[in-house]
Image 1 (cartoon, rainbow, N blue to C red):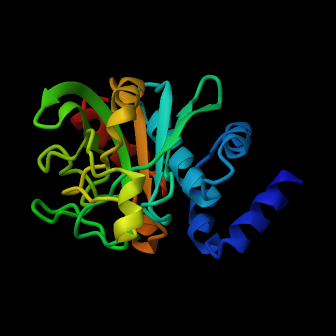
Image 2: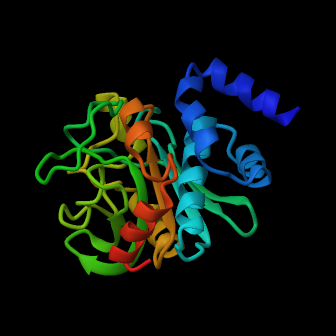
Image 3: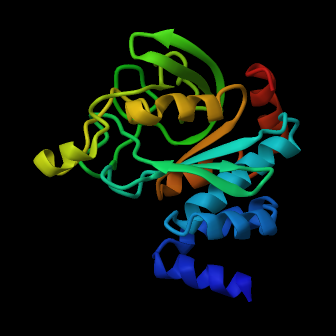
Length: 237
């Protein structure tokens, strides 16, 4: 019954095609998907399915277990609370809030993504969070992109989670969108410390957009254990 319900949800979203390769590629624990879907009904089910499948492939290929998973649904406008953070042990929603995209990714909607230094665009795919630090934006969080050619230059590009005054719903009243970053998933100053403390130290983050090329190219969505194991080893697991 639940499988049929999920199919109807995906078909209604017009995105079933993006989920099909994934379902054959890797095994996502369905109770986890079901529980997180219930906890976050506003999250596109394909985004959640992709995030869980990519994470599961990483875990099956030797990655250390994480306590939390963050999902960014870039198919939603910047004015929507499109960042979700889940507690994987409790299978519960920890936080849902605003998150910025890059200046050259789009206006209210992000439609362009890049791995290139100086692109000022957001990147898609699976990330692993790393160390927190004090930088020019204050308390911030570094992360490594785990998708070759898609987001693996994240550290070189200084793509980090940080607070930004422009991540403010009041901006949407004046400009029709919140402010934009140089590619970082910036968050509201009021929640930045909570977001960073929940995600630092080896948690997973998945940035999603309905992009067929990512589905075809991702070693996680098409679970290629040997390639994934090499990527994880290069990033310290």
